[in-house]
Image (tube, rainbow, N blue to C red):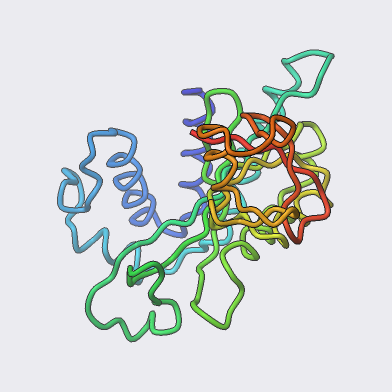
Length: 252
């Protein structure tokens, strides 16, 4: 793993247009790779906070080239791991989709169209995709949810899943892992159409086709208030209103 990381760091440094920016990038990466929880610029021992701020906000360098280089390196490394697995059943590629909020207070003129309120929190709401292979969890892509009247977090998540490179997904069994924010009918049908597996959270007030809601399944099991043949247990399949497929329900 160390050899892969060193190769990537050297490649990223070569993307910087000046030696000054190469030094700044090296200083920034050093803060994160120390993994001491002190990655803010003021903790850097080799560069001033103002120098790193200029590097991140003012100095011209290609963000797209950086992202493209990192992604190519990730795919190359993951496929190498796949090739070492040998023949047999395809290993799983877990794709975690998460909605993360970076809370913001005050006024940010440059971010006016990006900052919104979601679940009582004001800030940048990011739909983030992580790839999990073996013991590696790799940030892959993200989109900003821009508020009501725009694409929902579930729609953004589905878009990101559709854009996963085929060079990666065709070598693995893809398992989508997401919370309740991504349990919509459109999202589940979209994942099914891609022939991927999915484990998502579902609200307890989600309706079944027999008129009950998911909350009743647990109560029926605990209280015995339904005939034996209608009792539901962990891992049993049910039909939800609006879904064209049968799902397996579990809870904890």
